[in-house]
Image (cartoon, rainbow, N blue to C red; front, side, top):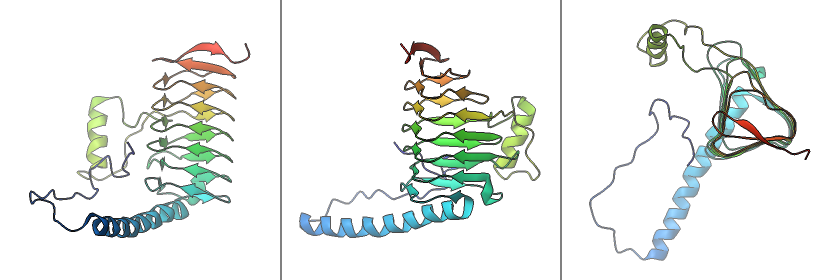
Length: 227
């Protein structure tokens, strides 16, 4: 299931479910109208997605994006750098606190439902694959202190003005030729060594040596690819 780019605040569109029975219009005609309507809205949605990357990042040749992809960056475009031949079907998000720097190297794949949240620095090496639903966070998203967390939420929700409180962050490095399995989580301060694999559903809180397979919560080395 893809992550909607409005997921945090429920700002996306809603549709009424009618209790009236379906019409008796021929199925072929209904299918034709459905294809034309979906094509129209998909084209408009794609243009919005493409505009988000054009306005919020600098990218190389042959960038391809999915219809649910999105790029957010309220600072200079240079904060997000995307290399050549990248496919992005997820969310690239430079947070509105800190001085984020997000670098996506050449030939990287970012799958559906992925979230890459950068408040410090995230590097994704060339030929690395992020399977659908995986998440990379170099920050804690909110303060750990309850009072500051309440203040932070009030600011994010627009209930109070002012800068957000300090949130803990540390750089994340995903080296070249790494495979992040579906629904895995990479936490702040982690470096994943070249050629390693993070198993599906793993929670990586410590750095991973090169050519290793890690699995579990917290993730541990279960196999060396050198063997």
